Image 1 (cartoon, rainbow, N blue to C red):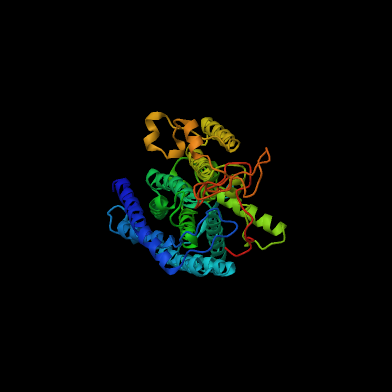
Image 2 (image 1 turned 90 degrees about the vertical axis):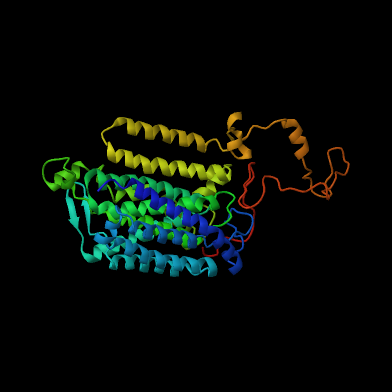
Length: 459
């Protein structure tokens, strides 16, 4: 059997194409059924935007699984394992709960129960953690109840971590795409580098998840025309968790044949390589940290852990002066650094240069966090390929005088005591520090969040 790189690429492209093509009709459907909730105090966008983007993503998931089932190098995953069917069953259930929440705003506890049921459905069909690699001990078999509880916990944590980080245009889809790319490299190496066929389902899940996110991102980048909603965020969180569960405990250290000795010695010696359980947790490190901080913050303030607020990491990036796009890119950077750093360390754990590169990139990330008002400018030859905000301004003085508007409130006097002009039909009034609508953000020192209704409604 040849290496199925082309089959994976075909599956990814079909998934992305179906997701992309379905998102437009789904947007019109969401507007028609009224799945456009009012803007809440914690929201960043400035105008109602349709949800239900998860419908298109679920269509891409189904298309990817169907195509993979008919490819020569990938159909063996469906013949030798029931995990793809288990994933589809759990994904259908969590997607249905998300669609109902996007339309009717169901209670948070009901959603939590639905997440547990979806995880239990996958466990019943065989997608569960059977044993764990413990450093210094070896492979520890789990009882049925232990495996079920650990599987459900991993699914619920991953789903809510992705759901919590879904607060800016393109943030959740981009971060999960980065995570799935790193996870694909890891599982593909296990499957075809060491011949471990148990990693085949996880590799397929990662490729399909990349396609789902890539197909939806063009519609969801700032300013977003549609949101994935809980139907999309919970769906991609479940698929990411399913890949982690599928490969956890399925790797035999002796099958790698890199170390001689007992299984216990091999497991301990190959810990940097043998980390299928830890790698998914490092991939969702940023969303998981946001989840933990949110729970601690809300319980410390006497609120419910499910109460909505404006204290997430992406909200804080906006507060310190970063634009919407830069905040998303910073979150992308940290996610890629942690995910691909873990993959690189698992391949060459003894290489010092990997650690030095990670430390250097971390320093770059910290510098970016301290420069919220730095706007990069593209060179002249590349201006036609970048958004207008990154192009060099020509005739700056003329543009500034032409774009100047009067922002003085009606009735305010000038420094000489004369009455200053009020905004009229040809003198539009603008809000200081806010640029445009639909997710636009402030660039001045003022807070970009206005005092609107309290953010105490359930998500």
